[in-house]
Length: 444
Ligand code: NAD
Image (spheres, rainbow, N blue to C red):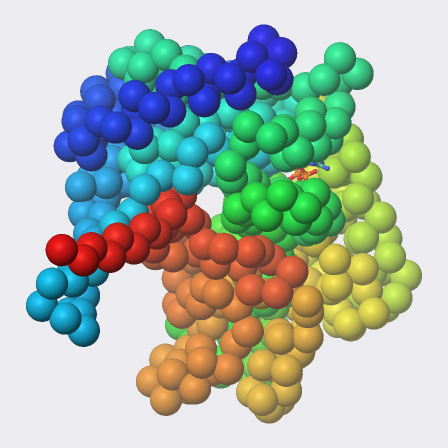
């Protein structure tokens, strides 16, 4: 379909979808997600093939996406307006909410279905219709997910998809979508650079925008931390999905008294991680990286760090063996002696690389952790309650994870501060990104 046809289809469907009761929409959405769940194997397989994450993790992503959409379906009937007391007995003041209209949903390749559900869930529940534009890197799993929702009962025209332009460029089609006069709101996840371009493109028409962008997430490990737990979470958040996550742990500041012990424990976990083709063996921990470009960036960052004095503790190359000849494989990589001038300490490496820094004073670690334009997630490992309170308040990020790595839960608002975002996703509050306020004042 051409972009114009897609936007018109969404626009035509908006009048009926937005007028349904929220209870009605909840019922329809739940029927649809229940159908999608039955297709999780198929969609998961497409994701494993196009994105590289092991099949078990891909399948879980599809199920998690259904959970998110259902969370918002239930949230729809809880959108409460309110009545204000007024200045006169013959005046009433009602505040209500209405859906913004047709939303353009632009998504990246690292979690192609999950990140779509964060937008699709609140959009559908609030009565919006959508045009989805997945990235050309991983179009198949999100397109099949949308198709399954429609097959499961979401009415025609409510969910529409558009892929790339004739030249194959996702940016080109994204730009056309963002500027289309029939689009009332854009929700996008991707790089900060693209997010800023989208915000600028939406400005002339004052189009509503929400953006979830890049990150460079620090972890501080205090002297009293549970080191087993900290090591487990650092390995999980540093290496899972090959570090291709906005919330990946990108730098670790470890108290000098536990630094070496912590590095040893993370190394021992990295050594045990299984790597391979997650399509034929769904249970491996790590698959290949998604793109050659991504792999090259990782190599550049590691080389740069080593040239600037970092010490390679583990990894730093592809795993050896016949089975790794094909595919963009790379070992989970641990560096110590990292310094702020290294690329990997400043830019998103977006790969399985965790650099460590020693610290003496906690205030110094906090300053270093905050020394970034990003503000997505900060991790803290400590036992002392007052350290936990004061440090989590001092860290500059929209999400603080203390002693765990479970960053995204449907109930928890996820807002990127600074260069990491604009607006919020997840949590109850996110549905208001898809709603307009109406104040109706009646004199009688
Ligand atoms: P990207 O910015 O290259 O692309 C994201 C999407 O935007 C794609 O669909 C792309 O085709 C489209 N696009 C590109 N240029 C556009 C333009 N000018 N106008 C409109 N659309 C355009 O990002 P990516 O490489 O696909 O994804 C990786 C990035 O996403 C990383 O920076 C990562 O940190 C970020 N990310 C953020 C979150 C979060 O929740 N904060 C989650 C996952 C990924």
